[in-house]
Length: 140
Image (tube, rainbow, N blue to C red):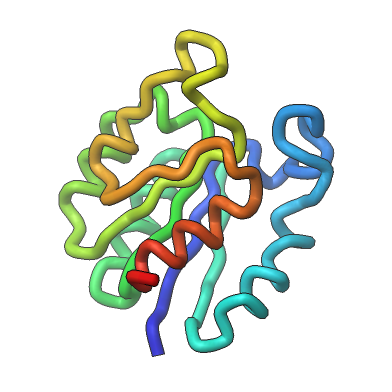
């Protein structure tokens, strides 16, 4: 059985409440069981942190334990060279997800340092982006 880790970065614990016109009105906790049902053949685990170092620690821990990671780094996508370096350093593929289309957001949100280190980036698909990320890692 494939093992995939879902990682959410800062402020994604507020999904469903934070700017619903941009990020939607469903929390990740509400969506996660739906994602699990969509991939019964995959062991999915979930982690969220608002702290950059904790996200780096989790990515490093995932190396060798998971077949891949689907990560929404939140605002760290646009600022964190450290996260990008970590993604490059580990031996498992990471797919980046953004709920909104970052190419159509504020200028400072249009570039993702972390996406440059990932095997693929899905931006603007809402919560469905996580399923797209899992499919990418499964090769389906």
